Length: 418
Image (cartoon, rainbow, N blue to C red; front, side, top):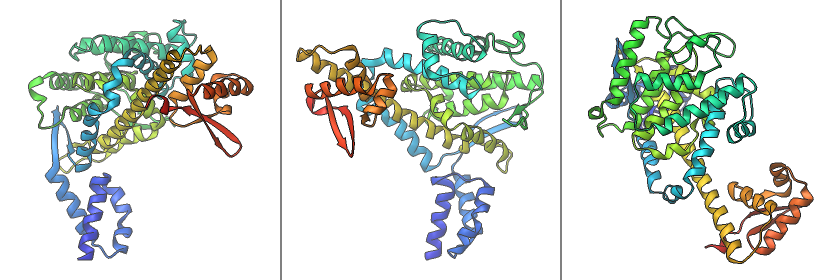
């Protein structure tokens, strides 16, 4: 009985809590056997669960894509859906303009950096807010990405068709490709996907007729409202689109930047408008290796019927989406805290200096208390200046001073508005 219980736990661990490849499960064989379990029985349970819960999503030109609707994936999607009920979501409209601008800047910077652009978030903000001319290819990439995101946001009701895609791609790639003729175009020849060591990791179809047919089938699928039933939440179909578009790889360059914009566009069209205020690429950038691994894992682990199992990619992407929602909640909380702190100062007739307003902004946007050294670094002001103004805010009761060892930390004084 004990062994049977352990076999159930291993099966759950292999395919619900995580979603291991056959090789990854084989690698843990000794661990299973060391506790007296039959490894083959564990694999049989895993196989049975996956077969019963496998859902077909899309087929085209002999290529088929499915995923395993595990309890864990359902839990994650339910958690994403529950964001609509949070206080942060209800408050988002108050700060919508700032949230959208911040997101567009972060997404432009992060998505371009994933694809090799070399610049900083600060420089990206300067380029966009001050409408400066890009000085190199990297700066051109981030500015292009910003305007492509704006185009997507302004045309959210537009169906995702070839015209829309090529316009996005043209904006994304303008002035950044080796061949100008490839801007806003689908590729007309073979292309290989290389890793950082210039090793081929994947070769998309070189059959251009097949490539176009797959794009047509994919676009017909995502634009067919009758097929977007609630039997399978449309978030799975949006994630499938992300993978399949990258799998087809229809452009010589700019595929990643284009598909990430299309993915967010599709999520918003599905009703997930909270993703207008999240830079998913910001999270992906921090886990870029895992992003690439998720694609490769799907491509190298087909199901017995030859179809691709997208579950590996879905586990990764739902992680990214949930992390993005957590960051959005913190941002909205920060905007709320800043607004309330400024309101309290106004009601009390306190005339705040520009430096004090900047300190309020910094402490309200941080999820942790900030000490003088960190505030000095963020605001590029001397520690003496920070200490003087932050202590004054504490005297006003607007921020709270916290002593820990030899350091003094500052955070919003939530008691003044509770």
